[in-house]
Image (cartoon, rainbow, N blue to C red; front, top):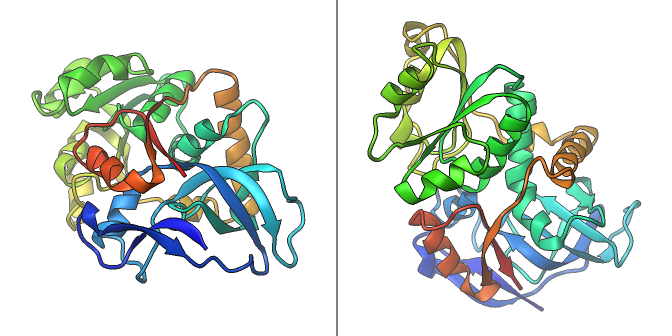
Length: 323
């Protein structure tokens, strides 16, 4: 038996129940990992509320770091005692779990467990956004919503490292300086400013090459008005609720725009590609070009409190749960 945080029915944070869960031996292709740190992400909330349906009861959580305990039949390349991390979920809100070897990655010695747990999902998301979905290059102008959030802080630093002019939006005045300190050339408090007008002002009317939007409902369709002709709207999250269906002609009317809704699962489905993505992430973190800020820690048993803080926009950077 292991302790885990489990959801038996969808709803509010009170639906997270800390209890004993039976964990079978790792099956074919699986590795048992003892967690030392677990990442907190908005997608965990989506599973709890039912926005992303999953069979119940379910253990939330999409990233973690720890040590290999044992390996299942057919697993090669991993051995007990090795430090590993992954982005795969749900299932990480537990002391231990069985993880598919296909998604597990060995950790470099100079990346800590907390750093890894805080960056695997958010960092790999930033990688596919900036390096695969729209390939940011020097001279680009990019708009990143929720610039002081978990993905935002990583993506803004990385985009700046790639030579882009980075415009970030944040939801409160106290997050403005944080975003500026993490790669943003310009920061807009979208609760108190018209971000479309500010983007036009900042860019001299030229607007942006790409908008990365993890906020969703509250920033759409205004995000489209921040794009130059042939620009790309990248929707990768729904922190304020999902984007409503819209007519394709809207993209035509606003400048022959491109729109996409990518996911990490699709980009990382090929093991070779996943390893390349992880190597890219590890390199920018180890070089210091991207710094991972773990700004809050909660006990696994207090995961409900952590999710309340996340939903209320009280968090900045990354939060980790400690088993």
